Structure formats: structure tokens, C-alpha cells
Length: 247
Image (cartoon, rainbow, N blue to C red):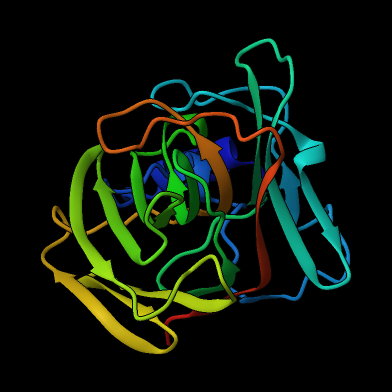
């Protein structure tokens, strides 16, 4: 059933939909069956490579499909110098086609090491999908690969959750980064161990299902170190992504 027809049917029955999520974007696009991606190959039905645009401030690069490469069990995300229409650098973003809701999200990642380069793992939805802006993010900044930066957005309002010291160098090897997301809170984990938690009501915790994103990028902001082209591509690698729906 088309979304418009379904919305009309709901209205005719005198029912209402939750106001915290724009149902137009979620109906028909929500996947609650789980996800277990080992990157043996690129699955175009489940994933897409962002290509040909930039996110604007603070990003200073253009998403380029060729910079997200899947081969032999590894997704490689690369930042490289390349003349583009919207920036002097080509960056990489790999995203799911479906939206996912409450549950555990995890990714096995080796972060990029270079000042001014950010490696991100997140759930996001917002205006491009007709939704409120809700987001949960884990990031490693290339100038300090012993620190994990945790951020989330609720209806477009940013919450800087924490900066967490890591007992290892995130650019030296693969580690498991995860977050458990419920209607009442978020718990972030590293290698299976909780490192930070936030809790609150529906106006204080993200509620809208989001797409899963994996990114390597550079930009200009007070919290990002200046990027100076090292003269070679800079990459991060991902070996596995999982989503387990909440019971």
C-alpha cells in the first residue's frame, strides 16, 4: 500500500501516528529484521555509496563512490585529493538503504590516522528523509586516535555526550564499537565494555529510526584539527557491521 493511501486510511479511522517520528519517511523503509554485514561483496539492495554531493559545514569534501571500496571482507573508506565540484578532497560514506530502530548497533573498525580526518559510525535521520533530525554518533579524530568522541542529536539539538579515553590506538588495529539504543537511553560500548550512558524522556533521547552510516571525511570546525594534505590517501577500514533489534 502506498504511504499516502495508508495515511488516508489511518486518518479515516480516527487514528493518529506518533508525533516524534515523521511516518511518511519511515513507513515502508523500516527494517526490523536485523543486519549482519561481513563485506564479502557490495550488496546494492542493502547498501549505497554516497556520491556527488557534500554535507556542507563543517564538511570540506565531496562524497565519492569510488572511495568506498568493498573487497575480501573489508570496507575501505578513503579520503583523497581530487578536483571536485564542491571541495578539493574526495571523501567516503557508506550507508544503508533502510532505516533501523531501537537495538544494538556495532561495527568493527580501524580508524584513520591523520590530523583533521574523522572516522565516524552513526545512526542518522533528518530532513532529507522527511524526519526530525535524530542522530547517534561514535567518532575518532585522526589527530588523537586514543580518544573516542560520542555525540547525539534530538530533534536537531546537539548533545556532546562524552570524550572517552581508549586503552589502545584506534588506528593500529580493529576494535568493536557499539551502542545500545532504547527509548529511554543510549549506552556506548568499546570491545563489549560500556564506556558511557545517557538517559531521559522522549524529548531527551533520539526516537526516530535512522540509517546506518560509515564515514571518513575532513572539515573545518573548532573541534577538528587543521588538515594538511599528507600527499597520499588516508583510509579507515571496517570488517563487520551488525544491528540486533531490541526485543
